[in-house]
Image 1 (cartoon, rainbow, N blue to C red):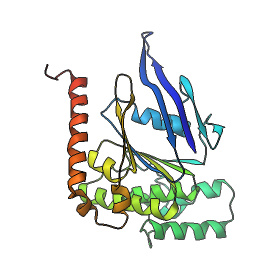
Image 2 (image 1 turned 135 degrees about the vertical axis):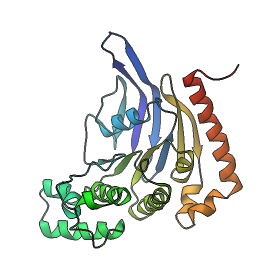
Image 3 (image 1 turned 180 degrees about the vertical axis):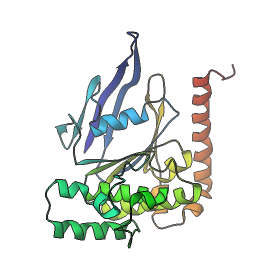
Image 4 (image 1 turned 90 degrees about the horizontal axis):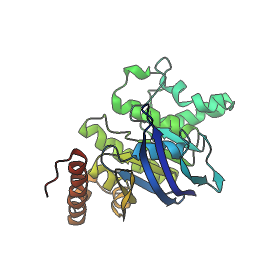
Length: 264
């Protein structure tokens, strides 16, 4: 479905030098997969997501989606940002329906779709509320619904839960798993949280910096299990704890190397 072939990305600096953000990234992502991407700050996670979204063109390499070269943004690839990036002058209903209205869909069809999405993300009764009056978690629910309203094949998430408190974040993790199960969408999620990466990734990609590259890839059972189980029970499993500690140590070592504090 999504083919990333030997993609590299460099940025030119004002002094004439350049920074190599990504080097030789290759990935195959299938329809309906739930992918989490983890790594220390500066490893190019968001750059990679922006290239997949079509916001950036890679310096070299190629991306294809459904056998077509990605050359720019498209409704088939929807983005959910760390902060909802909602239209604060619009209410919840108008935020969710913005994409379909811009596409010229009939209002009756759009209104029905909004009601279905409000039900899906647990915001029944909030359609007429101003988005600035909602909590951070509720705003992210609106952002998810707005993305789904365009019916993308792939949902790209850039730290969508990073600004939420612990309890709200756990509820939103459960919601993402629910959306994945009920919609069958392909989801690619960037996170700095090892816990979140383990829970929200059938496949977990660990990236390393200087330049950004794929360091490890893991096939994981926890997302599939968590669809029908309490997330806290998943976290108690010995296999989960072992992988959590191993990956946390890996990321910690990378961070120390970046900061120049690793011991010989």
